[in-house]
Length: 246
Ligand code: ZN
Image (tube, rainbow, N blue to C red):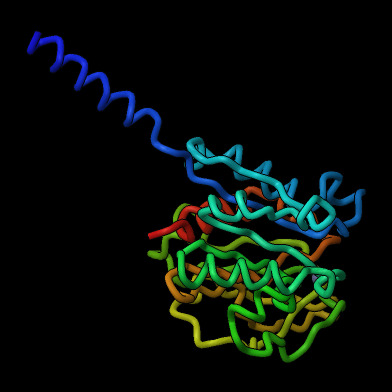
């Protein structure tokens, strides 16, 4: 009898271990990227990369869009998200303030990681969470490409990323970024303008906001298919894992 009870206990522990809840990342975008560049929008391309990542086999990767019911983030999904990735550009104003307040609470009080990409710098959640204007010194469509350089090789988001690589980038943002001082900037780089002028610019920023890890990545203009590029996919997977609850 005692042996049977012990066996049942051991089995129970094993079942519990197997049933550990998966972590969840929600990749949100507004659905405005050109179809010839991103057939499944930017959230679809990022999610495809995360699902293909060896390090994220035990994650649920959920795609959410502005046009979905409850703007893609019903309470139950937001409540279980460990990380929220946000890309927006033309429709920032359509995001409901009530939803932004829910996101703010999840990030600051409950430690949901947040990742803002490119033009999401002006999104409502990013501005609310940063608490600053979140503007750059300049926005120019005269760029050809950007050389991204790892500037904090020991940071988890830079792990396994090529020290230096080039992306097509039509649109440069110029320093400084009107955001709180970053704890770490794991990626720097050089914008190479069409006329050959080179411009140094910080590409990636990390903060702690409330209880959460927070990452902003400057790149990701909708006419440049960088979210299919292996180096960028590695950065996205690393960032999601890093941003998950501590
Ligand atoms: Zn852009």
